[in-house]
Amino acid sequence: MALHQLIQRLLLLGADLGSGQPPPVPPPPPALAPLIDSIAAAHRTYDERAIQCGHRYRSGYWSIYILSSVAVVFAVLPLALGWDDSRHTLHPFVGLWAVAEVIVIGAVGAIYWLGHRRDWQGQWLHARTTAELTWYLPLVAPLVDFARSDGNANWYLRVFDPGQHLRAAGEVEALCMRNESMTREKLVGAWSDHAFIASYAAWTVAILESQRHYHQRVATRQHALLHRVHALNIWLFGLTGLGASIHLVMHTLWLSLITTFFPALGASLHGALAQSEAYRLNVTSERLVGELQGAIKRIRASLTTEPQNGPSSGADSTAIKTSIQAAIALILEEHQDWHMLVRPHRLPLG
Image (cartoon, rainbow, N blue to C red):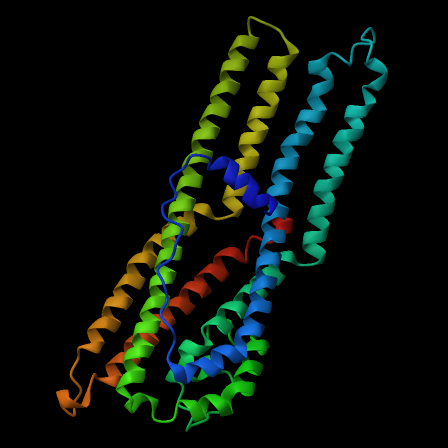
């Protein structure tokens, strides 16, 4: 478990986060199975890299904020323990707290420097974008007109407005080039095959349902995290105020520790939560839950739309293709929004 996950798990102890099991996804259409198998290893590599980079970046800035409050404790503890008094038996060791403080501050500086020099955030965003675009390639493939080429090897650029960080996705373009011949052959006549259309639509709906479930979980988790940190900060600053009031009539160094450390811890938690964009992720995910549900309804409705050639010719493939394309565009726009949301929070600014 990564550090940021451990901290958030502690903050969310006892919180009701709902069911963690996404709905089952049916098998994909047989025509898409070779493509899925072909890109599986690449997707697994990119996804594992994205998870690793994401843990490193998020644990980095949580560490910076939490260690900053720990440095405050080490600065005040010699006073609270009385070691600063030359008559105290442990006074010769008072310098140990200063050394500990320097070590903590050095750790904060090292994390800051490494995160900037190695671009932890940039690595995470690139790996996550590549993993996402690789994962959705089999969904996009049936929407590509392989009979016509506009000079773009990247399938996303043939189907969608090229704005979702696609031009920089060289790995995805290479996968498209590698699998184009096979995929073109497998999808010949697919949109005139009623079984393929029904299977493709059902598979797409199931993937969208999984995405809707994921964003529901994100919204629930971020809302609970916001509530917990807000409540904890109220207690921390309330106890700080109480300690300061008591300090007016009772002078004790332990009260000085409380009135110094509690505000520092509260500020650290608030800073880390702000950099994680918990509030905006909560709002965005709540909005996406509704939009994905609407996209799912439109795909299901398109399955019952009669084609222009008459009801005997099956569902209207144009309506189904349009509704699925709009749903995938919604997912790509969400990824674009997430990218623009996270990008300004480069680790050095933390």
